Image 1 (spheres, rainbow, N blue to C red):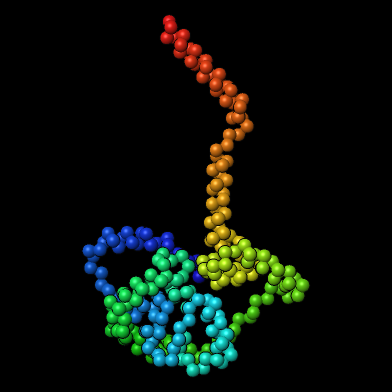
Image 2 (image 1 turned 180 degrees about the vertical axis):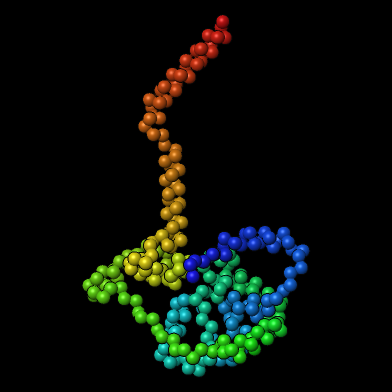
Amino acid sequence: MDGAIPFTTLYGDLKHVIESRSSLDIPQKSSGLGIGWGRAGGENVAIKIEDSMLVDGIHNVAALLEEIEMNKLSDIDYIEAMACPEGCVGGALTVENPFVARVKIRKLAEKFKDQDLRPFVVELGKKLSKEDFFESTQKVTAKPFLQLDSNLGMAIKKMEKVEEIIEQLPGLDCGACGAPTCRSLAEDIVQGQAQLTDCIILLREELEGLAKNLLVLAQKRPPAMGESYMKVKKEEKTDDTQRDSGETTM
């Protein structure tokens, strides 16, 4: 992936187009189950597995995965793990309030029959199942734990730097910078793989500060346009007034 386009940049234009073409007859292909997938719990509704559970929020997901590693959830067949609170509707740079969006998606899913799949989706599922599309026998190996430095002394110094950077970050863990948490971004910065302005909150504050400084600078006159400049302009204005007065008298 080279990048991501936030929905906030598209929403206004899309909304305008949809509203201006509301009379168009657009065939509805999405099922209620597909629409509901974007909210926390949507997957559990769709798959209909009895021993399933839901967890949302990156910290809760991480904690749950640790419990799985310790074999504490052997009786669960399916886990819906959503990194974003409330599911996709609570992701970074979304438009609607996640709680409001979740309610809207639930109503849309119910409107389009959230218990039924459209026939062509059913047939596609059967086809993919025969091709073992939904099965994987490959062993999932864990990635190596982040090592700040192979030298213990240097690693401790970098850890202290991480803590200093965390104090500067907003602590929202919004994921808009590409890192799952503010701590992860701080670690990337210390490793030279990111920079502080990758945080959109800090970047906005910095841009606002620059804009204010430019405004102040624009309101200041350089020395060449100081008192001496204003004195010359005043004398020129006086000469023009006297000249106009003389011409009127004549």
